[in-house]
Length: 183
Image (cartoon, rainbow, N blue to C red; front, side, top):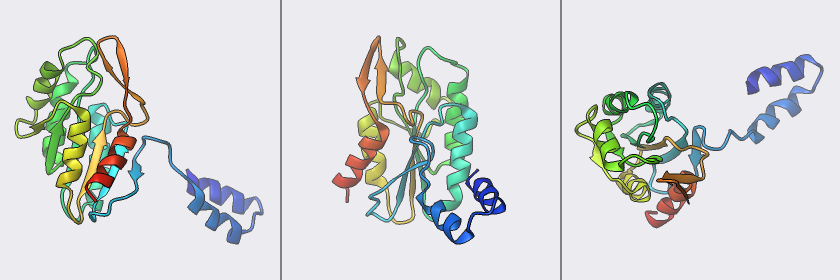
């Protein structure tokens, strides 16, 4: 999209020497393949809204070429939503990531452990860490030079829905803190 916009600007008479450097100022949408700065451990951390099988497969395939080391994914599946996608997401994570960590992602009125078990049915070798904060911290603690960590499912969301309560939670903020603690 940015390339098309730049091309249109140049075609419309704008100076390419001003248009091209302006591309460096573009920031992506929050929670959409959002790179979290501070990867002092030599790896990269990304937050993405991938909460469907297709979305998870797309983000893992997109980041695989950028992982000189391992591709580590933290993900879950929402409660009170399509149950059939849960083992599919597990299968995708198990097939495309080197390390999969299954965690909670808005369990809503369902039993969070049961949701995780359904996800792990597709990825029995996955680690299971129900507490999303701890799952993120664990993934970052595993990160080495060349690794890519993907925290998938919540993206821009600012809360974790448990029962009827929305608890403040931000994957990007949690990843930032984990990177500071594991620098």
